[in-house]
Figure (cartoon, rainbow, N blue to C red):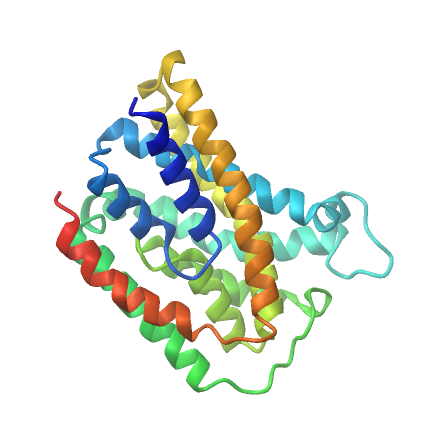
Length: 265
């Protein structure tokens, strides 16, 4: 593959941006083209290192995930009820993504469409923060089936590359009445099943492009993605009690023209 430092840079970008409302897709596309690391094998690498970011969330929220297998008597988000909530959130994106996967790959992976998704997502964040009302749901254990399904429907927006899965689910949860921190934490938990399904589906189709010589490169990207995602999630949750999400919207507005200008298909 490419030099080891490219795996570090891309792993760092993946981990830092996957669970923030800024679009990891936009960052990886831009970085890949600036580093001259493109093509089918590069695309497979970008998919594979998402597993490192997913693992970081599983480890950070291991008590919550363990509670899905061994219900906690004082936690409503556990056991079969917790699994049902995650299923309701995951189902819309899985169904819609399966039906439109080919069309998305063919028509929505371009500099203009990704830049536009960054721009529209930024406006979405600003609009939600501007019209923010008193939350009705303050904790994960207060989330019910209706809210879980509603967040899942908003998650379908993330099928547009550049929109951001985290941005879609966090903003969707806030629109539906969740407090900002609760919306973010549920977004992290809900990311695991849908990302595992999407990453697994893509890797099954493209894993043959990699060989044993690529394993070290993948291992570096995976490890860096894990560490940086861990740090990003911890820092982001700490910020939410003091700041709004508006800075992420302004950042997206600045990133959108860069993706359009520097991404040469």
